Image 1 (spheres, rainbow, N blue to C red):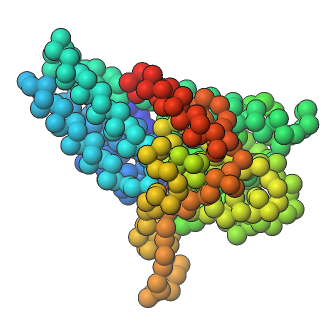
Image 2 (cartoon, rainbow, N blue to C red):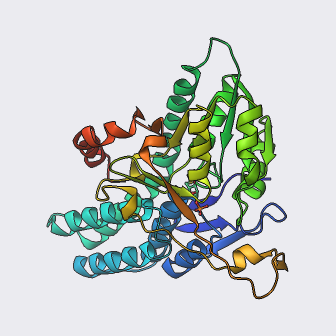
Length: 363
Ligand SMILES: CSC[C@H]1O[C@H](OP(=O)(O)O)[C@H](O)[C@@H]1O
C-alpha cells in the first residue's frame, strides 16, 4: 500500500490512479497538460489541493521539455494552458487560485528585463515545484491547529471520537491531508479514540480512499454508510465533525463533497462542533456567499454503476451533484494553516489573510 498520490522528480510526473483503489495501486505517467486535464476530469486524481498541484505540475513537465526564444511566447503558453486546466473541474477553487498566482508571477518575470527567457522558464518551474512542499507544510499546520481546537472542547486526557466525510488525506493533497491531517495529529497525540468516516457515495472516496489511508496508518476507525450519520451522532457521542473544502466563500459558506450539508444539519441538531479544514488557497474572497459557487454535476453512470457493474435499474433518471454548500451558520470554525477562524472572522481578516497570501513565496 502506498499513500503517495503524486510522484514528481526533475520534470517527470506520475499520479496514482485513484479509480483503481483499493484493488489496484497503479501509477499513470503525466507527459503534459492534456494528460493532467484528463486525469483530473476523470477523477483519477481528485481532491482540491491535489487537483491544483497535479494540474500545475503537468504544465511544469510540458514546458520543461520546450525551449523558448521569446519570453512573451512562454508567458502566452503558460496563460493559455493554466486557463485550460481550470476547466477540468469547476467547483474546487485551488486550481484557479494557483493559476491566478502563477499568471501574476510569469507576468512579473516577463516584465523584468534582467531575466532571460531561460531564467524565466527555470524560475517558473521552480515556483510550481515548491507547491508540493508548501502543501505538506500547510497540512501539518492545519492538523496541529485543528487537533488543538478540538481538544480545547474536552477534558484533559479525554480521547475523542471524530466523524469525517469523503477523503481529505494524502490521496487528496501532496501528503498528510487536511481534515484527515487533523485526525492524524489527534492519533499522534494519543487523543483519538476513533475516527468514524462515511462511505461517501457515489464515488466512495470514504470506503475506497479514506479506509485505505486509515488502515495503512493503523488509525482506529470505523466505516459507516452515509445514511448512518444521524443515528451515529445520536448514539456515539461524537466530539467533532471535521471535513474538507473545495471552495470557501468570503462569508464562510463552504462547498464540499455532496452529503456535507446534511451532516452539518445533523451536527447542529446534536450540538456537535462542525469544522472545515482547508488551506488559505481554498478561500475564494471573490465569491461573497455559497450561492455564487458553481456545483459540478457528474455523469449518472457514476451513480448507476460500481466497477462497471450496474446497481440501478436501466432507464432510471439520476441527479448527481458532486458537491453541496454548507452555510456558515452551521460551521463552528474554519481550520487553516494560519489558525482557526470563525466564519464571520474571514471577512474581517480578509485584508490580513490577503496580505499573507500576497506575501507567500510565489507558490
Ligand atoms: C482536501 S480534499 C478537499 C475536497 O475534495 C473532495 O472532492 P473530490 O473527491 O470530488 O475531488 C472532497 O470534497 C474533499 O473534501
